[in-house]
Every structure is written in structure tokens, then in C-alpha cells.
Image (cartoon, rainbow, N blue to C red; front, side):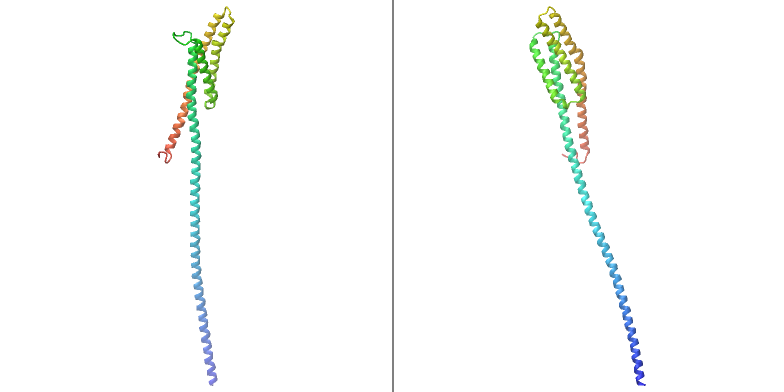
Length: 247
């Protein structure tokens, strides 16, 4: 009887122990699951935060590099534009200089020819030989300068200058070459031929050359006017740009 009671007590204890162990196991499992779930969420939050930080840092670096590239590109463009405008400014300035000098030499050559070939000479003027020399020197100086600087002159002006140069040659040939040939020959007709040659040369100077010189003057003014307008346009553009009025 005592043995059976002892066995029953042992069984109760075993059952109770099993229940306790089971409860502890379940509780431990729940605690572990809760901790792992909490840790997983925390890790997920940390990972997302780290990812956002990395993306923002990389994005800032890209934006900074992009801005640096844009500034460098803009600086290079401005430098090229400045260099191009500087070259263009020098070319336009040179064109204006050539136009002014060329027209001055042309006017001097025409004036010398006009003085030489004028039918009525004023008292006290240099003799014909001296006037011939002056006219030849003026015409040659004009033609040398024109041929040397022709590249700076517009095609329209070149065409007019070439025509004027041809008329100078025609007038010179009539007044000098033809007259010298007849006078050297000693022909009875020398006097008449001399007069005809004078008239022919004067007709070229007054009837052909002077109207062409008026047309050439207009062309020169147009050429230099275009240059002035281009320079003014660039100055206005430069002033309109940021910092254009600095200094």
C-alpha cells in the first residue's frame, strides 16, 4: 500500500515537472521569437537608413561633380568666345584701318592725276615733269598698298578699286605715253595728236573716274559702317551679360 502511494506521488511529480519544462520551453521559444523579430526590424531600419545615407551621399557627390563640370565647360566656352571675339575685333580694326588708308592713298593719286591732266594750269604751279613724277609716285604707292592689303577689303570694294586702277592706267597712257610717242616722232601732226591725247586723258579722269570714285566712297562708308555696327553690337551684348559692366 505504501509502495503504491509512493509511485503515485512520483507520477504526479513527473507530470508536474513535464508541465513546467514544457511551459519554460514555450516561454523561451516565445522570448527568442520576440527578440529575433525585434532585432530583425531594428536591422531592417538600420539597413534602410544606411542605404538612404549612402544614396544621399552619392547623389550629392554626383551633383557636385556635375556642377563642377558645368562650370568648367562654361569657362571653356567663354574662353573660346573671348578668343574668337578678340581675333574678330583685331580683324575688324585692321579692316577699318586699311579702308581709311586705302581711300586716302586713292584720293591722293586721283588728285595728282587731276592736277597733272587739268587743261588749264594755274600760274606758279610745278611744271609738268614734276607733276608727272608726283602722280606716278602717288599712283604706285596706292597700288602697292592695295595689292598688299587686298585681303582686308570687301569684294565690292575690290571690284571698284580694280576698275579705278584700270582707268588710271588708261588716263596715264593717253596723257603720257601717247603724247611722248607723237612728240618724239616729230610729226607735223604732233601738236594735234598731243591735244587729242590730253582731251582723252581728261575725259577718263573726269567722265569715268570721278563717278566711280563717288561710288567707291559709298562702298567704303558702307564697309566701315558694317564694322562699326558689329563692334557696337558686341559691346551691347557684353554689357548685357552678367558682370559685363564690371571694371
